[in-house]
Image (tube, rainbow, N blue to C red; front, side, top):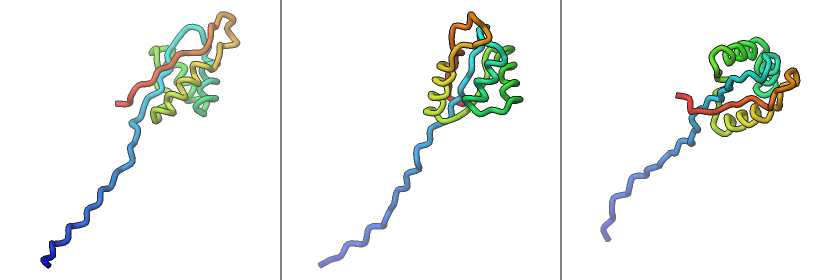
Length: 106
């Protein structure tokens, strides 16, 4: 009985799918104080005071600031946390939380 040559063993290695990074972007408004923004960034993201202060100044002057770059699921969670943080107790007319968005990091 003729024998066929052995088939070479091949193995396929699948790399784990990696979620591309996303930016969490805080959007400016006139309904929150610097103190609120700083406290919120420290509470949600664990940013140090000076970084949170710099981000508060940036959002005020530029209209937006990247506050984190993380995987999509965490970016969505952080966006939700920003948007449910609540109004600024220092401003009686503060209607609620700040706004945020996420976008793919280029």
